[in-house]
Amino acid sequence: MTAAKTATKGCWTCKDRKVSCDRAVPVCNKCSKSKRVCGGYGIRLSWVKNNDHKKWLLEPGHRELQHTRIRRQSEQWINVSSTDIRLHILAKATIGGVKGEHVQRDQLALPKLTRSVASVTTKVAVSDAELVQYFEDIVVGILPSVGRERTEVGRLLLRMALSGRSISSMALLLSLVALASRHRGNDMVHAARAKNAAIEALVSATSPGLDSDASIEHIATGLVLCLVETDLDCDWIGHLCGARNIIPTVDKKAHSVGSDAAIILDWLYYFVTFTRFSFRHWRTYMIRSTSHELGFKAANHTCSVQYRIARIAFAEDMSIIATYAHPLLQLLAEVFETRLYASDPLYHSTDYQHSLDNLKSRLNDVDLVTRDDGRESDKYYCLEFTKLAGLIYLERVSRNFSGQSTQLDRWKEYALCILAKLDTHPPSFAMFVVGCEAHTDEERLVMLDFFTKLEQGPYLNSLLEAKGMIQTAWIQHDLGAEGELEYIHKVNLVMSSRDVIPSFI
Image (cartoon, rainbow, N blue to C red; front, top):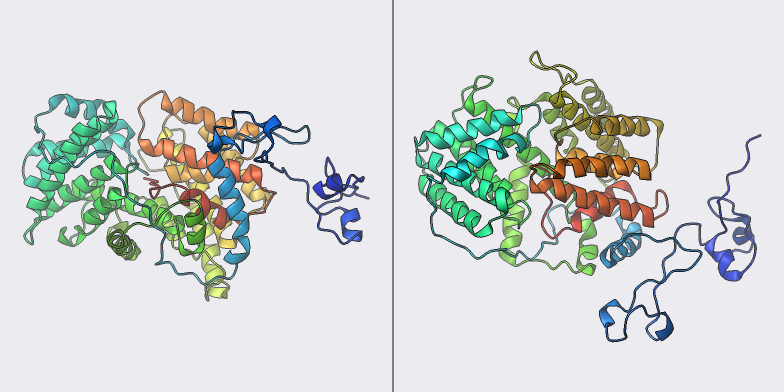
């Protein structure tokens, strides 16, 4: 006979009543028999009362810190901020309102946009050779990509920028200078000048007669500008929308594999795919009230309109350029189109459930090896890690499953083993999804050690953004009881705690 599962210490209700507890799970029998609400066995936080001068850790004058938590023998210390605590409380308060709520995907709680630097229109010299050399030596090796060598994209950008064949190529060169300036020393003023000069060049180059080659250069410039601004404000979405809207001017003929057009269209598909993931979870209607409670103010009406236009643009079919993308990226695009909420009329249909099974099977069996790559290369392991993240995410969101399973544990363990041997970082999406699965100290140390290793070399700002969101997810997991927050709701809240829509590119 199997022994009944018990908690390691008594429930909070019995502790408050100062009676013994039988520690039964999920609720103790003593509370059940006395018809009391069992307080459970999770961590309980407390704050110093306003008039408790003896327990103040600071002088009474520091009113903003007067709620500093004090230590009791029965409590555990957690490294959390006041925002983490408020997010946790509000998350629990909105659990009941999420189930079955009608989804209105076009309503958003938008942030108030702020700029780190004033707008500067002074053009920078395109002959800034030192920054161009820095881009070639350093930035080329850290550009985001799935299924393609990072240096392949970077060298193509450099070659097109230095060709000088059009105004669009000049704009691309200026955007590379802006990215290199931002990355080398975070020189915001210099980067802003180069960025604004690039935008001016793009505007002057835009015309109904834009040829196919110039269109590819225009798209490439928009994508580079995205990397300049992903952690500053929502302008990066505007650059991406602009790049996406140029697609109709690109030659409709099939571009050969490895051609300039094919590589840039593949890169655009990468940006659009992972931005769809951001749109999928950041400040949707379901958590709008929570965003307001956390102090995230809605932006003006103009920003709201622009954002809705962006959502519509990203909802449009991108199959016209999907053929240039890696098969794994194409499958992830399908994953990001799956239905999130049970309130959707088609969510429980037999056909939809069969389509999910089919998608999971195709994702699990996708071939990651090309004739030029082996199974021991960093590129292969990055793809395998990203595939595992896609499988974990699909398994979670297709059932809104927050618990544990043998299959999920296997995927997570394999992903962490891969991470320990990687020298380059996978897509931020994959890091975020796998990081959210790390619940033990050992698993989290693997993630943190990997971030520490990458931070010792050159990296893009999206790496630190992913790290910050993973740590926020860990805190919310530790504060709540197991399975207390539905998976989708937790991801929504973690991503929505950022002022600017997170970039996973």
